[in-house]
Each structure stands twice: as C-alpha cells, then as structure tokens.
Length: 252
Image (cartoon, rainbow, N blue to C red; front, side, top):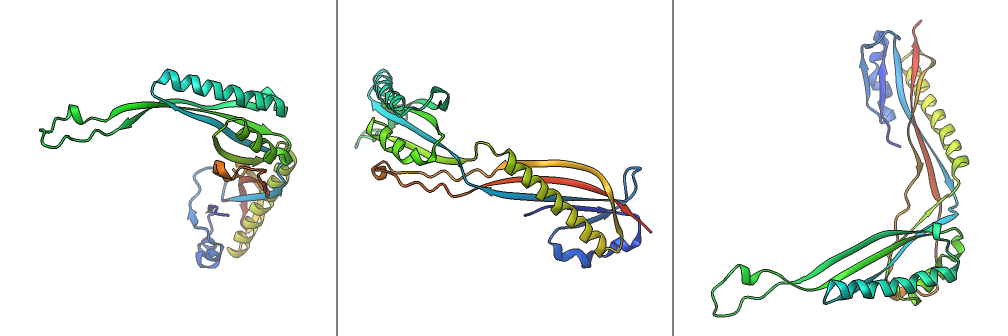
C-alpha cells in the first residue's frame, strides 16, 4: 500500500536517510513546530477479504419515438411491465430505487444541397425523434438469485442492464479486523524507522482514521443477447481501513 511518512526529531542521528530508503516512502526530517517534542507520523492500511452477501443490479428501459410524449408513454408502459415482474420476483419496494430518468432529443445532421449556396441555419442538425431512458437500481439480498432475476427482467421487456455490483451488507466485523491490521502496520513501520535511525519509539500522541470501507467492485457491463440463465461470479470483497498515527520519539 502507498503511504506517506513524516519523521521529525531534534537529534543529528535522524539524518540517516539512506538507511530507511528501502521502505519506499519519502522521509522528511524537520524541526518540530509545536511544544510536544520530537515525533514521528506514519500511516498504516489493513485489508480483510469477505464473501459478498448482496448484489446491486441496475436495469431499465430505453424507448424511442418521433415525439417526446410518445417516447415517454412507451417507456412508462414498459416500466409498468418491469415493475410487475419485480413484484412477482418478491423484490421489496425498499430495494428498488430510480437511478436515472432522462428524455433527450435525437439529432440528424442535414446535408448541404448540391449547387445551392451554404446557409448556416439550413445546415444545423434537426431533431428526428426522442429517446427516453429509465433505470431502476435493485438490491438482491440473495446472490444466488441474481441470474434468475436478470433473466426475468429481460423477459419482461427490460432492454438495458447497466451493471452488477457486489457488497457485504454487514461489514462491521470485517472493518474492525481491518482497523486492527492498520494500527499494527503503522506501529511496525514507526518502530522500524526509529530502530534504523538509532532512536526509540515512545507513546502514541494521536491516531486518525483516514479512510475505510469496501473496495468498490468493478461494474460488469452485459449485452442483452447474453442474458439467459446468467452465471454469476461474485468473487471476494475487500474491506479496508487506513490510519495515521503520531508517536513520541524518546531521545537518550
């Protein structure tokens, strides 16, 4: 993991940069700017792998028509069919959320007429129709059902599957383990730096958590023609935590 290290002290011994260069982190020696004495600030990161227990799927409908009214009407009809299918699948209302609703004109570039003088206004793109996109984000609390649900929504008329994301719904236990690893890594780094610089590590002055949570899974874009009893591979979710710790440096 990439991390930064800030090293401060008052003794000449701490000028031994070459000895700690192998750590791959830049070490900056500077005079203390407060009254707490010499200190060292390091960062640490911990990661824990967990099996996902929930999936988020974004599905929807795209419709096109000559007028915006017709495109919206067609989209509403298709979305009603999709919602009815979700009811049959037992997807709770709390697990459905509109992710996108968009109405956009479709343009076509006019071609200049041969033999006629160029006129900018006559060559501007013209609207030839409208496209409506309506996406709904679905939480699937049983990963084993993802393939079944994808197949069913396509059969109901959905022509857009925007991605699948896997997550761990209750990640508190894994996050706690990641924090412990992060603190241990930060302390080990500080001890090694002090040992290399021929000084001693003192008590903890400050601990700050700089980041936490699951690593976002990569969305899987899917072609509609391939959605038939879709095989799903959820893999593993990485739960991570990062800390920044400041330790006192003890000078003999």
